Image 1 (cartoon, rainbow, N blue to C red):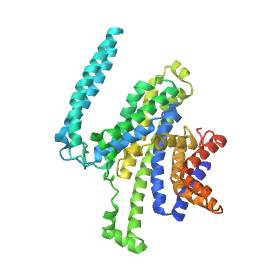
Image 2 (image 1 turned 30 degrees about the horizontal axis):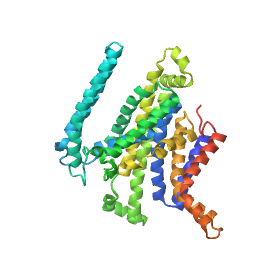
Image 3 (image 1 turned 90 degrees about the vertical axis):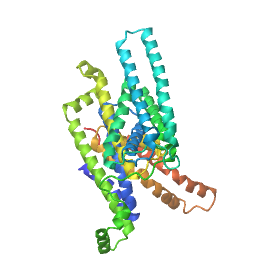
Image 4 (image 1 turned 120 degrees about the horizontal axis):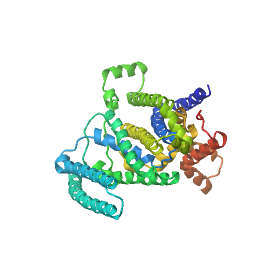
Length: 431
């Protein structure tokens, strides 16, 4: 009953936003909050189930967004002929070279000769790789650089990009995990933070991949979400609007957002069902046992490092899925928008507030903090205007009015402190 009341209270926030602001705004916040809840589930899998602290969540979100560009973006005329095939060939060569270097480390006898042979091999492979890659990149970026200058996408429906986003994030997590999961917790956090920033820097600077900071717009919507203009041109939709005496522009925007909400809720419910099934299985009990006492679990014959890698990959895949869904919602890829404050710190706040280790708690925290983060943007100036209405005009009143833009961070910090003080295990704690 307590959990139902908490979810009902959060739902009431969205209803009040619709009544006193607009339903368009309320649904927009709801969609972003649902995506945040999916990201919170991914982080909860890593931290709540296995105790793995990752500070590179933003990297998984960005890789999910990149998947939408590669799968659903429009094909670029001339890009393939300019050097797309050569770029992929260079990337495949690089992957094979790394795999061979790992094989050499395993097969050659330990000693100075093995290290020297591996270093020489990697140096030679690097120069060959750049000899293939650099001319192809220059040719692709020079291909209609004002409008394109990237390899383009496959033009498929955006729904196909969602699992691809999960796979891209999972693949990157596997590489990161193989390198960093043997480190201590604080070093793991530093390593994941650095790798996440490397991924963002790559998206911003490699124009051939997704146009870099030039941004990539006009990405297609997932089925069955139509465009507003298509709805407004539909006779059936116009008849329905006439019956309701509503504005076609407003009604079409609300219908589109409702369809997005239905898709996101469906994905969220499937993830919740799968997570509950996994957590209550022998595998889930084993992961929690490893989290609670690694030494005891290892003494019982459990492969702790392998299970950590498994959990790290699964959690990152869920975050990558949410990143792909967010890019489909926005209809564009903007690398500069991937900030650690929004896609790492904020997701951690959601997990802590909702309840670490509890899937329903992660969802509650994601939706609640998602609403709060976006609602304070318009409630903050209104509240500050009300608080300073009695002050005389002057520098103090002006400075307070300008500081309203920072109330988002103040509110999040205050909520986090209150939860840590009065509900340290979260609003819905783990049983």
